[in-house]
Length: 130
Image (cartoon, rainbow, N blue to C red; front, top):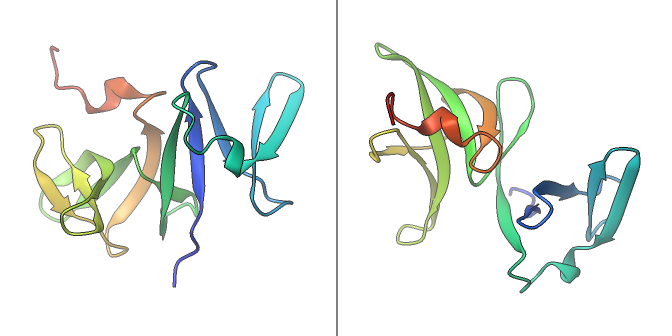
């Protein structure tokens, strides 16, 4: 069973809050010389934050993969492609969305690498010339 954990994107301060490695139920952000923590419950229901669920998978470098991450994925016969991780509410599963909006299955058999997310790296999934 995968661990249930979240991180949160702070829309106002434009910074990612990550699960606190030392205290369960807390999230932490690091900006400049300051490391701040607060209970995860403080961000629940607050429209300032976008919650991102952990998929339970790690990329080829051991980096946790979260909803709305961008992945570089090696596809046999097709080479490297960039995808966005999304939650499919109809089938209750994580999926990959390519640059054209097509849906791909998402599992740990893919050769994947986290290369960004929708807030900090939006340009990675844009079509050329847009």
